[in-house]
View 1 (cartoon, rainbow over the protein chains, first blue to last red):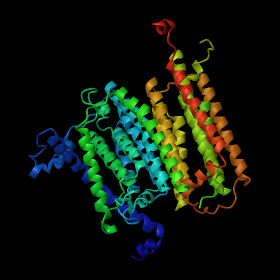
View 2: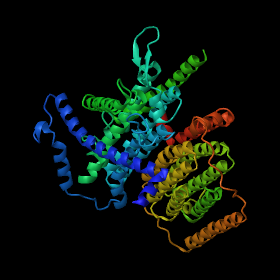
View 3: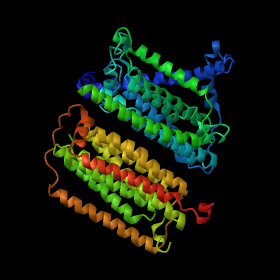
View 4: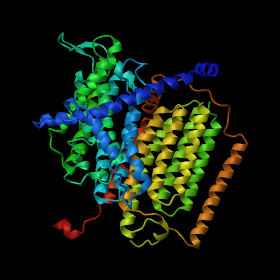
Length: 349
Length: 100
Length: 174
């Protein structure tokens, strides 16, 4: 006991222990959110398509995710004979890992309690992890030794790296406004209320309510659909086109890991959107309620993601690439220019 | 904290591994990867020395080295792809005819 | 604790670098290189170069190595099969040169040339590492910055022109 007390006295041990506790809590909560996100998607999809979603398993179908997990755990696992075994097994893990790492820098409430670690380059960590997410799909496609999987994998990674550029550039006006790369700093710069100039209408000081951040917000939203391979950019996993794209040869738990990764990615990108453009955890009421507001905004954005998926038709691959390179990239560059000119002019009269 | 000597020693080891890779392997892509290892070893030396001297110039130079490495990889891989189209091989020993 | 982390990341870097040059399959070599670039990024974080560490992952591990993997998959390269006496000669000489270089650097450091006292942790620059780099980059190093952007443009155009291929004259006239 005395040894434990003296160990606790070291500040590094304290910080690490608290961080580990937060990590465990976030992991547990987010895994639960992912499984119920899948249920929510099926329910919302059902209602959009004028039918009820799952409603058999449990009241209102609420036990459906548990039934799904049980089914997936019990399914047979196939590994193709001529696949590269090591990479075949590692690829699904690589799909989940970057998304979970990004959770460590997202502020879910007033710091320092509600954020695992506040590094000074938090936004760059998010961009780095989204760059690493490309590997999972490329390697999954290649290691399956299957031409549909390979094509799906290469298409998807080309799509992801193309839209990463527009995504990164569209976060620059946010940085210009907040002056810091740290995510807690960016949320801080969105606190309070401001008056619309020329009128007396109060608006929350969120990023998206400033005119030069509206287009970056839309660009970020569109590129996040592409980054997570969600419709209307989900050609790589399109059922009709490429059998099942890069996860053709995956079954049971590995396939479940891919989908876990995709939904986790969705949650992470929505969290980053909330942090950068929608004011993070800020909301009326005491600061401690921050996490409630954060979750509310997160779920609203997730609903938008699901809504868009079941509303828009899929983009063809050349339309997709043309849109990313010829429309979104120039638009975000022009936006950086406009935002920097406006902010400089406003700061220097 | 970290003595500067350790950083430089690590940089030297990785550089030597890169040199050995360039000389030992025949696959043009693996040779290219060893060149990237050497560039990264140099970057590590820059950062290590920059920290030792308390100046940011080391990190600025790393920034430029990374940019140049990106450009070099793009052009180098285009060359390798073209050579593959002509010669059907990426083994540098077999690309020994100047005739196109 | 920092020295142990440094030793851990350094060991990982050396081990994965060795696997890059030793492994038969080029795809596995590329993946080991990704791992070594990520461990190098960890070392940069330990050396208080956070911006460089993150940019290393974004640019090197996240873009350059993806390009490598694309090319390897596109060329559909299999395991390297190399045999013959001249290969053994070459290998021997290659390893010897590498070992000589290592010996040379060990002798250099044995003289205590590069080491000084362990530098104190520099005070965190105002606004963080990224802001400090930005301040220097856009004032003193503005000209190299612009020249590097021209270099990137030239490389981009060059790569596209090279791989576009030449159409036969009949097709162009049609």
